[in-house]
Image 1 (spheres, rainbow, N blue to C red):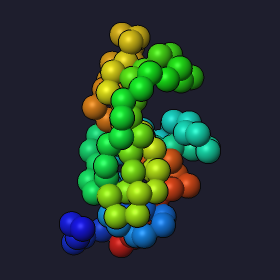
Image 2: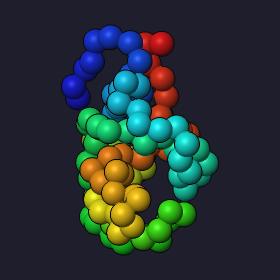
Image 3: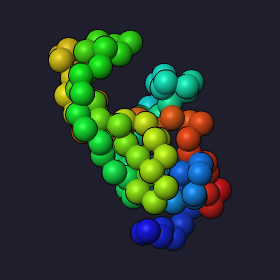
Length: 106
C-alpha cells in the first residue's frame, strides 16, 4: 500500500487504504448508488473492474467499478466513455461514494 504523507487524504471505509486526495475533487454534486458521491480526477490503490455500459442519470456511459486494492470493497466507478457530448468531461475520472470513503489526516 502506498502511504501518503500530508493532509486531506480519503481512505477506504473498510481497511483505511489511501485511495484519493481531497485536492483531486472535481465535483461534490454527484449521485452514487447509495447516496452522495464525489467526482475525482485521480485515484490510487484501486483495482478497475470490467467495463460495462450503464444508463445513468446523465445518459449512457461506459463505466468500470473500482475496488480497494487491499480489501476489494467496491468504492465507486471509473468513467471510461461518455456518449453525450456534454458529459465527455467525465471520461477517465472516478466516482467515489461518500459512504465508502473516510477522511484521514484532517
